Length: 285
Image (cartoon, rainbow, N blue to C red; front, side, top):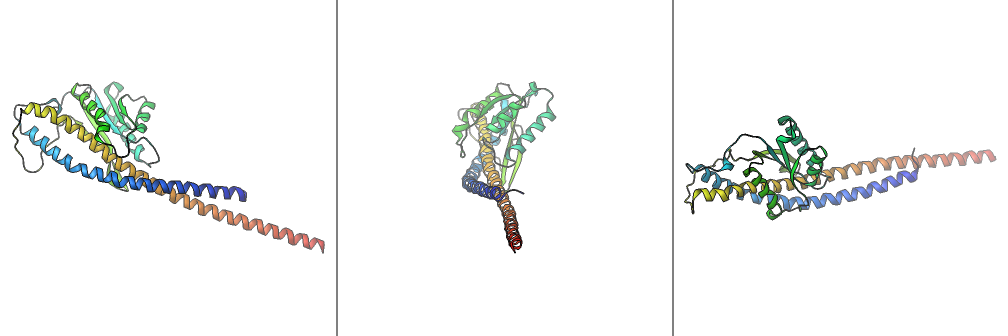
């Protein structure tokens, strides 16, 4: 059995750990509130953007755009959103497992695909396994602005337009609630599944339809990436908050267990001392 000093040291260190995890939980809860508001406030913009793009794209006859047309798939791109830091439960592992299994299932050669990684955890994961990483970005803040990812978003769209990739898929954690985040796969490009919802709207174009699509479609694809990033950030803070709460609860249970062990050891030591005293007194009689 460990000495009383060792047990007391374990209790002290576990209490300090629980204080840290509790503080991290509170920080993540505060960040989650803002990230959730950011993600929700972006939804109306995305819905309107989709409505306009769908109506314009489907309302034009005789005019096409490369982003709306499927072509022979020679190379696939996967844009994967993870975090820069761990301590977030299964937030990163679940998304990376899904992407890795998808790649193993769909491809037989590394020439057939490449990854665009947002987040240090994902970038390092793919590089360690020899998976080609075409682009990566790290160091994003907890509440990222569109300007922070404008470069990689536009580069991603350009890689489809110049036929570096023939299709693009987006992987991220969709925020459902503070205790539920779902791994989501979304086809980013080509935009073959876009369709108007509700009443169809007609538009007058200035200067012309082709130039409108040339500007509007890349912006729409970039906004899809940014919306997924906001969604992922809310999921990250929720996952970290839950993980830190579980860590705090586990620390409390461990403290209770150590305290019980400490009390038993102390009682045994006291009993041993009393026995020795009584035995010594009896020997002197």
